[in-house]
Image 1 (cartoon, rainbow, N blue to C red):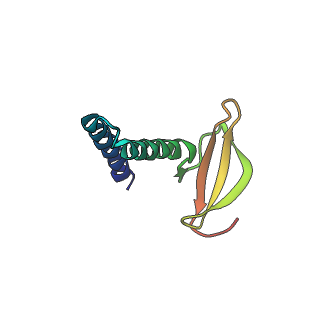
Image 2 (image 1 turned 120 degrees about the vertical axis):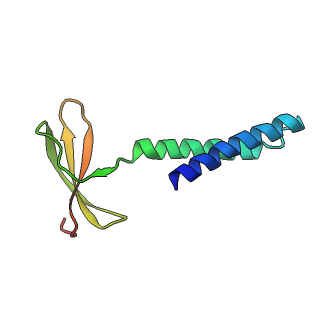
Length: 99
């Protein structure tokens, strides 16, 4: 689905720019803006929301004590933190809801 939306955004930008250029009056500016907003939203979503992994990270990662239920799948998730970098990783615990 993500790839389809990326193509729709790119197509919106291309068609909007083409129509605006061809008409000389900016007739495709709405489509151009729609394409830009869609692409930016998809890029922010990819960066902001981290994927959940199945295996625990290495020994330099420490559990934070944070646990939550992943909204889409009702899976329990444990949060780990890397002390030096400050990065966080989300690890799926199991298939039952036990938080």
